[in-house]
Image (cartoon, rainbow, N blue to C red; front, side, top):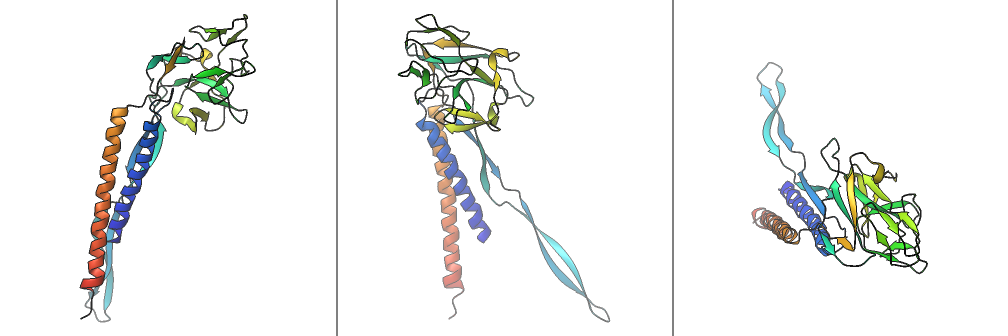
Length: 278
């Protein structure tokens, strides 16, 4: 009986966590460059139940031989194993702003597990260490530096800040940036062979799990991409699919809740009616 409580409760917790992930995806459906998180559910390992007992054997001194009887397997519930972002290319939208840039994947080599890599803009994180993002919604700060909307500096191919004379600059498909006064720089683009190893840090930023520096995408073998000025990469969240998944998670949570209530009523009867002494 108590095992049923645990199984139903684990199902409720798993669906609650899944709903939280889906809700975050939906909230960022209009965030440029946002990569939707995908969850994977897994059952706890099954347990084999056996009953141990003793059997009396008629003998002069009396013998009790131990034996065990197999009862069957028991599934102990489900849990959300992990949440990983999907790095599928988002649609491009025309904004007409020169400070908006979009990365377009052309050819991304696959690693040994069949997962395709991904390219990112390189920015200077709050701690000065490199961070990576797909959000190309950039701006020019008061000192002329190219920054993200949250104020983090965009880095060039030499991991240096990019300073411009004005916001009237051009960027070609190869990432070469030319300012109005003739200043030039090449946007720092990094390549992650295994993007699932990146750690999400919020605000559209990613970091390598071991705080290492990603490979330069311009030098990566087989990597092909281009930049488009005046465009933004939209979130890759599928709003209709996410809504359906949220409803499915809610119904699963509700079903486990009803199972838990049924166990509770059974325990109430066992404690207050069946076990009552007349």
